[in-house]
Image (cartoon, rainbow, N blue to C red; front, side, top):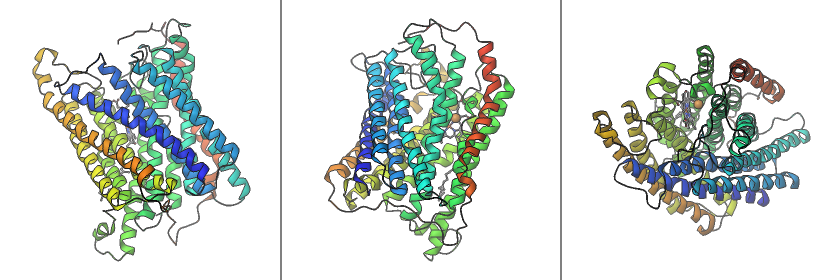
Length: 543
Ligand code: HAS
Ligand code: CU
């Protein structure tokens, strides 16, 4: 990276992210071993405590730190170095997030917050669990504003020009994050913190879950969009091609911003207290937010095909031979793309009301998100590391590490096919998610689950070997690889590309549509909840 000071800020985020991967991944391994029935946890560690460590550290900490760090790098590379003020804000954001992470982790590790990563009321955790989470969110806002100001400054200094697509996408991602975290901030600050401190005796469960999922669905797109940035902008350069269509890519990101927020009810399809017609409406919007992913699939095929044909490969599928299969910077994200085909299809099943009745709260759902976040997104993040880290540390990716990276990618794909595949199948047989090992007195149905649980332990073990490998690779690229210059690969548009329409920079229009759609989808059902709320529930400690 060109600016050393910005690079250090990105690096700090990467350190925390991979520390979270190591600890969170280890607890994932232990979980699959427990569920196989062949292993008991030592030293009084609880299964649900472990599951909370796993979910919070991987789904919330690893992702948020990696994404914020990566977006700082994207902005610095394509809108120029941050000013002193912007970078200071970035560091303040980083430290606020880190203090929050330490608080939340301490609450979980000391056994005072085994409430899982969705922290559903009326399960109650120690106040520091919620305060820590609030700090993580506030820290990320500070960083987000640093990015918004940076973008606005670039636009002011370059009047009439179109901002770089990578900066544009970064700002969309952080805008999505800012708007959706308002929901989780509201429930944590207004409901959970006063309740856990004993200031309020009771909590409205439905309101808290609704605010959580208002945040929880766009959260998954906050994970996905940085991966899409790489697919649209960096992968073309890595494979020797061009960005297929700058305008189409920007359009896809705007569609994500518009449609990914007012859809939280698809996580609450079995929730009593929400009228069916509002669920139906949000399911329609859920199917709208599939469209930009389909656009992305189309754009990827087009990018690959055009790159192959330009190199002279012919025939209907001849172009696939032109792809750099031996280059881990391509292979890791590519396996991520592949796994999004079944992962996305599973999402469509979940979003369909009737089918969701079959799979909701079964381990099928766990299978779904291990394909999407833990493969599609995470393998793309690993793919980023192979060029981002050496370009920051002034080192190079050696042939040996590239080869090790390919082994890591293959292990990850294989481990996930076994683990996620058996989770999907076991879910169809009715096995619940979020459940420690039990034979339920040996009923026949439950006995049919056991082989799948053993398969999950096998897959989980392969994945854990993958985690050890990637940690070794990261350490190598940070401290051991030979010195040298590594490129930060940024693709260029096709020669005959049209001009990017100016309307994409009309932020007030897009934010206006987002707000309007959120109001249409949520205002009535939510005010109904507030007006007809029950007396609320006292807190329970189930752990
Ligand atoms: Fe999901 C539950 C619906 C996408 C993550 N999801 C979850 C949970 C998580 C999660 C973490 O409607 C669990 C939350 C919890 O703890 O309870 N999901 C969807 C839908 C999509 C979707 C409709 N999910 C994701 C992504 C995630 C993610 C992305 C993380 C990153 N999901 C649901 C629903 C539930 C749910 C319900 C609740 C279920 C319940 O009952 O609780 C869509 O966005 C998917 C659209 C994607 C596609 C695929 C496009 C394919 C592409 C790849 C192209 C490949 C190429 C390579 C180019 C239609 C872009 C090919 C090359 C060759 C040579 C072949
Ligand atoms: Cu969702």
